[in-house]
Image (cartoon, rainbow, N blue to C red; front, side, top):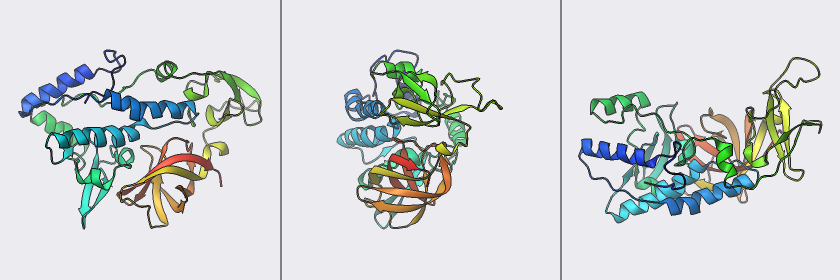
Amino acid sequence: MKNWEDDDDSEYCSSNVDFVDAAAVADVVGIELEHVNFAAEYKDRVFAEFLREYQAGRTPNPDVLCNAEIKFKAFLDHALRLGADKIATGHYARVRESDGRFELLKGLDPAKDQSYFLHRLTQAQLAKTLFPVGELKKTEVRRIAEQIGLPNAQKKDSTGICFIGERPFREFLNRYLSHQPGPMLDERGREVGRHLGLSFYTLGQRQGLGLGGVKKGGGEHQPWFVARKDIARHALIVVQGHDHPWLLSRSLSADDCSWTAGEPPQLEWLAAKTRYRQADAACRYEGMAGGFALHFEQAQWAVTPGQSAVVYDGEVCLGGGVIGAAAAG
């Protein structure tokens, strides 16, 4: 799949290198290679929404949308047109069929589980999907690849934006978004610095604020973190200390929901993640018109509008929604 064409020959997005690797693997395994371009679909269905969310001051998760719209829609539809029965991807997750229904399960390698990014998959998509590495640890996958002579067995893990790659993010966004500098305000409303544009910052961010050396009350220096975005005043609110109360939330609301079973959970007590690689957090689920609320037993750090709140019942990923707001109480 080729899903990105802007500056495709740069050091950050080298789909040509990926194609050569795929061709080499196909040659070793002895299978044909189909090359298909979904760049137009990606730009329309994923990247345009990605930019809209950033422009609105939120922090979207393009990997979630890319899975739902490209890998398990555009690509799946293409594979079925070619005559495929199912698709197989390298995601660290599992599918279990029970009484004609399909459940999305966490991958067995807790350090690599990617069910968070797959929570928008439907019954129809899960029914047509295989996750062959979901039962394995990444070290075992590399060992098998090495054993059967795959030339990319030790290839570095992919990181960064889905299909765009890991690159200087502020410079990248600057090419697509209008931006307006404004004040950085502390919790008392005092200006402590200037920001380059609200789109360039995310809640919980510590690096790149340019506020080093400012001490709180003349005492020991504590690092600054982004706590809020005040859209009306075009201000970035920053606080000192990792555990500042403004960085902690006991509840959140979410909308734009998607449930793997096709309907919301019937259970009240579940667990949830508000960001990838976060430990499951016990919470009370409350269904609401157009969305849901989660009430956590323990306060969650830097719950960020635009990110996904993904709900679990044990190892089963039930689905989730896009975080709209968070509250301390």
